[in-house]
Length: 627
Image (cartoon, rainbow, N blue to C red; front, side, top):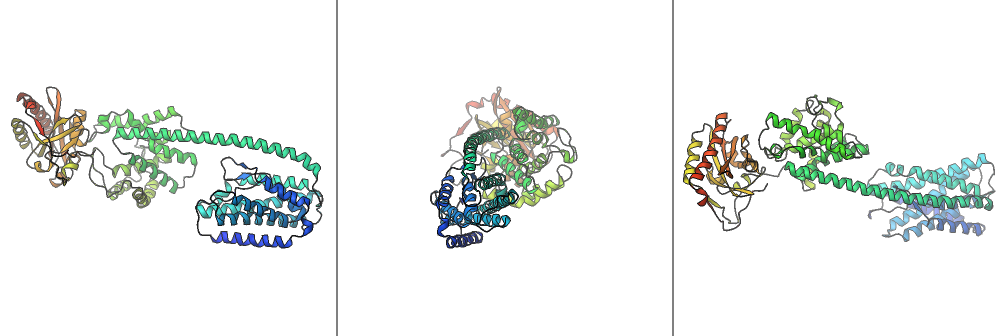
């Protein structure tokens, strides 16, 4: 039985550890060569050497472990008992050399280690046996079991410690992994196999002069049967592992597809959901979470925490203004609905509690179950903080992004009320590192600019390529009606009338003089910003953020609120009418904007304007505002 020879992933400078192993192994091999004399090279020695090398070719991979087992150590230990350390040391050195030169991607340091390590392990195991047995190497062995049993146990234990330990350290130094974790992953299997090999070898060797073939005849068939049975079991275990891996792949792919569906409905990028997942796992690891099932639950829960939004109407989910109490109650149902959806899937990890409780609050005022403090699952507590931060620092249909500093201040203000204080503190500590990782991945960073789509992106863009914005003409009567009505509205600072020039876009057909030069001819994708949302949902919006439509123009003119209403001409959507103001708009103004939209639609219909309205084609294709 043997560990898998070291297969280092990439060439690297020889570490001090590797140099020490090679030097020690070379000294032991040299000593063994000098200790070798003719009487030791008899038929038994050559037979055991041949069986050792041949046995090493019949290996079985330990399922799920970076190690193999074979029967070769039985012959190594038998050779130790019969001839002392010299013959078996040279045998395993030759075996290690043969294995290395027959591997793909051969490297000198790999070969040197695979020759030196078995020589060290075998020599030290031999010294342990003869020290415990109380005899010199090569001398007749006592047939007393009280002497042979502890000696054989010592030999197997020392061989196991050196063989598995040196290999684990070498791999760890090269890969950066934990030596103990690498060693622990296959220690139990190798320990049992080495002790079994030492026991069989001890039984097969009688008084130190020859092999007891009667014992070999009895034990040999058992070894063959064990080998065949274990190989069959190993093959089945490998197939099971592959099946589990395939199922895991399908599971992950299903989770990804569900997450993408949620993102598309919620009008967020898949980068948001990926960042939330990665940041959640990073925070969990930094807080000492090591349980594999819990980490996998967080990994999937971070992607699927908003799956319940599939049941939320689009007009509520993507409304570019504050939700009404009734709409908020509808939105709150997504947590329990998401848990309901995932309960039917029967995931192998505890995802449902994370999804159900990611809107619970530390002080018990969250939903859906009003859990308090540690009653909330840790994964849900971490996810709540991470998701809030990423949402605050990302553009949304109802507001532009905040800076990292602003978002951190909000988290800290909610520490101990909304969120677990320990999670907030740890997350705030990690923000710089998380942002560095985001930047390295080419993902979200604070330097990204502009707000969610609307009028702003094209309005603020200088068309340096010389392309012309489309010029749109509306009836003069409709223009005068809008101009006079807006001038009479207290607090109204500007107005934009966007005509439905195509089914998927609006074109700014008219704007009051104050902002007209900045927005004339801008294209608005339907569904984007305030005006685009109104066109998509054919429903009015009150008290929304002007910056979602006008970007920096809104800030330049101090516009802080807006009201938008659809304009219908003969029951067909013709466009939208949006009025912006520098301060709060009263209910009267909101009602006046709705009435104005109706009057504009009637005015256009009476003037037979659709026959005269036209969009003058630009010299080059216009640039549409991105969504």
